[in-house]
Length: 273
Image 1 (tube, rainbow, N blue to C red):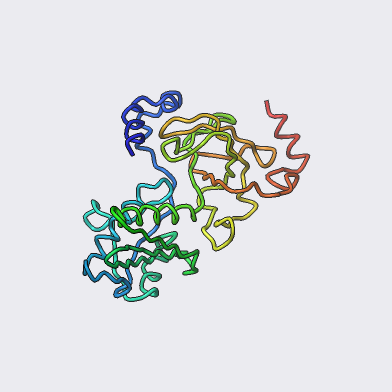
Image 2: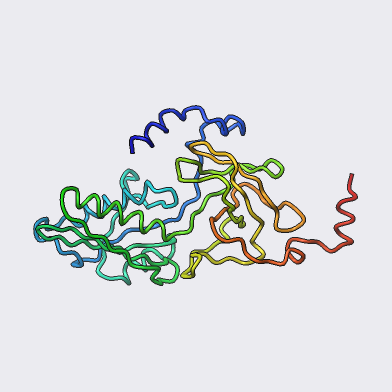
């Protein structure tokens, strides 16, 4: 944490931001998955701290919300994260399906020597279970250690996502950087905005081949931003700000049939002065 705070303190001037004329890169919108956290009434066992479920769930939600690819809803005050207690899975599904990408049911168990937490991750659109994550710790700091590790495990189950801020030829500016764990020389697939849908598949995402626009290889990093080189899937560059990137395998798609006009149209287009 100290290292990350030091990086933030010394990143007031961002070289990529200045180069791309971004006044405050830390204020840019970042592509994230919308995720809700719910407690099922009566699912926890906290004999020594009865009634602490909401406090624990709020702490867990805070840990999730600071991770780079997740955004949790705020309560009516718009200052605190929203935690809801529900009577069943059905209630959580009903509350989530119209406005979230994922939702999580959490529960907590303590004994005199141990603390454990479980989180089951679901698709908000279909209610399908993505997976269950369980952590247990003993000793000093067992609560914070358990919830911190659980948040990282759950985060790793979601596809990494970022979006295009600006385009200059084959160079693209992206909305996440070193601070969010982006590294150099990785190939990200590019999809049209909102084309990638969370799904219970190995890659965690489904999309139409028509929405696959190509790839971006990240080549330069600052704390809040990164820059990459775009390679089109077809003959022409169709990307624009807002299109989204995912750290997923590049699909095997026939380039001859993707984003490629017929030869006569292509000849007329290239003949335009």
